[in-house]
Image (cartoon, rainbow, N blue to C red; front, side, top):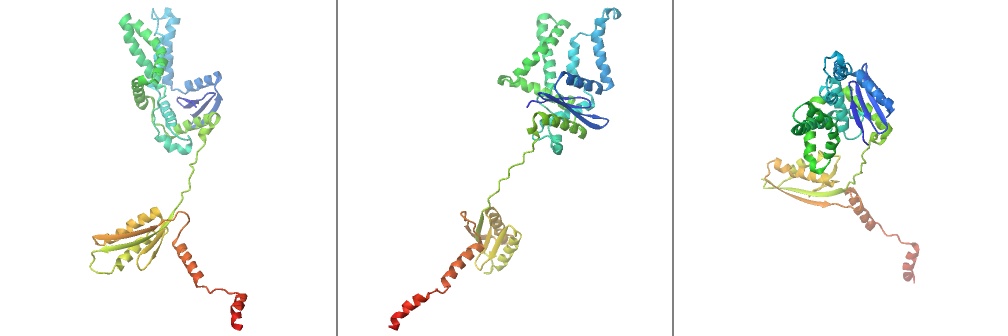
Length: 375
């Protein structure tokens, strides 16, 4: 879904295929609207933009317009001065990027951060949006760079044939308008990656240092509100928070028989080391089940946890000065059914009980066996 953004002194417009959304601040209160994309809506946008601008910007705009048109309409009052050439209007239109008022620059930065954010745009994601990049590869600053770059190049080329002067500058200034779509198309071609990199590098520098500023909380709120208002109408799927599907991990329980033998000790007893090892095993209670036997220690748990436990208890003799340790490990890892220490013992005890129970003999069998004796 292609969405365009347009920031101004009090807020941000997001423009979709059929609608325009706006969120702006009026007397510190956030307001918003959503309207169909039409001539009436465009007039409303122009009105909001003009009346939100600071007084100095309005005066500058009127001065430029007056200097271009009034001398041409009233030549008798200006003693032969025809006023500024028409192409100055192009310079002013593209050049306003370099004199954006402070609040506009912050709203512009908030607009870029929303475009740079991956995932769902929402207030809950404010910290992530604030950390997003303030540059945008599709920013209108690219067009500004292309226009003034084209004016420079065309002025040099035309001057080679038409001489240096105002006529050459005028031709270049008007010709640069036609150059904008041509250069933009070339930027998408593989053979002109250098051109794309050059324009984007200049544009990013301008975006960071001149045309945008780090937004504050209120600017980000307006950007989020405006974007969500348009999204709810034209691409609501972008507002759905996708919960990750959690795949239930299959846990495999295994039993390990461990014998740790310290080598090179002064005595033959290892009970003190066994006791220390069982102190370590207590730290894993809840993750494992263990049982001390006269010859070894049985430990039951997930295989990954068992390896961690084995490493921990293998280190115990070393921490008490032993220089060599022999650790014997035997693992029973059954995957066809759940196997536990208690279950294994119960199975064997069940078999033993079957063997030791007295045989039950019927009365008929007793009579048949006793008959020959009676005869």
